[in-house]
Length: 571
Image (cartoon, rainbow, N blue to C red; front, side, top):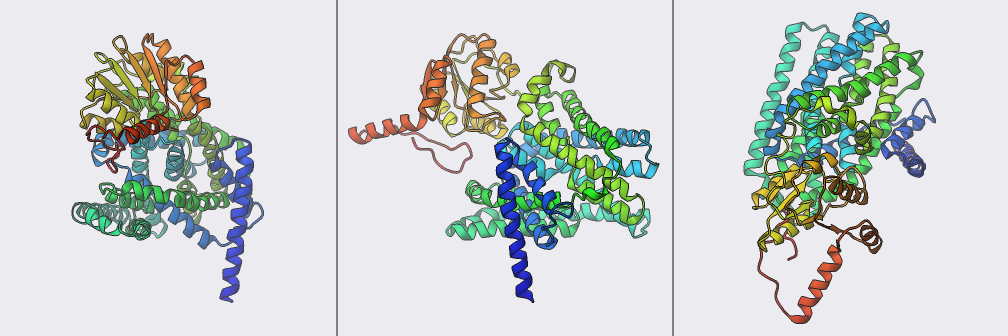
């Protein structure tokens, strides 16, 4: 009997994988984001479709493991100094968005004819954004390390804490507990959280590096440990009441200071994407279309509120705190959808008897609309910003950028390097050692901080942002060098370089331009676009290496450093 059940589960998983590959391929041909395709797979495989996904326990297990690995990988990249720096804006934005959505969502729900209790439930459900979906989208766009990505992660964590409090309060009401009991449960969870933070801090201080160094002698064991550690802390976090997401995140943070974090991240990336497929399948399968009812008009109104109102409040708060409208807009788009926890929250309300099935159907439909729409909004965020930028001036103070720019705006330099990845950082370092006045630009705050720590003046900024380029003082700059890594911005690599060229021209730049390219075709297109010099990093390095081998001349002694601090660069 057990063998038969196991065989059936295997057939089911195999069918889901084939269906996911097929639907994903169709979505790829139609240029649709994979997340939308995978959620569609869940709907097709769920009770509203082909009813293939019946082994809920197995699918949920794989989905939860994927969540733990995803947040673990995010935690691996978190810099504790940066967390402290961005804490205030994350807290203010997170709480402000929750308060705004709750108040105005409640009023809109009342205006739509819902009763008071149902309106309150719906309003609270609309405050939750999906950490998993946002982190996945930002990771795919290589923007999880950008300033707006880190701020978004910060206020999503604040939201998760609010989710915990709301769930505990609702559970207490469900079992008939008194208000004092609910309050004590919340305090207990926070106490557990503090204890876990202390334990993780001690692990970082005394055990993390020596343990990982010992495990690194067997790479397969290192990967197994990383997965087990992520799952363990996720399970502990869930058991203590503050969620698998925060537990997995802490697991990553606990290993972020070790010298092997990049190796761990590289090995787990593919596994993360495979496991997250089951999260999106489970999410789609949970969307029971039979309970949608006659809520189309109300769902559209509430969806527009989430898609427009939530980003606007984030934009307003960040603008008031001194951030540029571009940063606020890109961060704000991350809250333009509701979460899977919204559906769980409403289901709990139905089970308690506070709301009817129709309310769950209403929030389910809002979830379908906002998750799908926000996926496109985030995927094409830079293009969308270009469309709406002229009307966003009211959200930016005159002193905007003070929170982002800590250093010169380019004045007094004769070379500016856009992109401080491996190649850009090494290039800036070599130019500085040659006696040139160099300033670097990157949209990864950690890369900017690292460059400054190694004596290179650096600015935070997006090379594809015309407004940022206009802010630079380029009168003394002789060379502008684009060393932008692949997928370094939300647009394609070549589009980012073209945007840079146009932005420099619009800013009145009169100097020469060099661009790093990786193929002859791209090199030709860059020359046609008016670039003065095309750098071919791999070909140039190979030519120099061949010359060194043939002449037997040793390379100059230097101190090459990788911006992530993990591996030496080739001189």
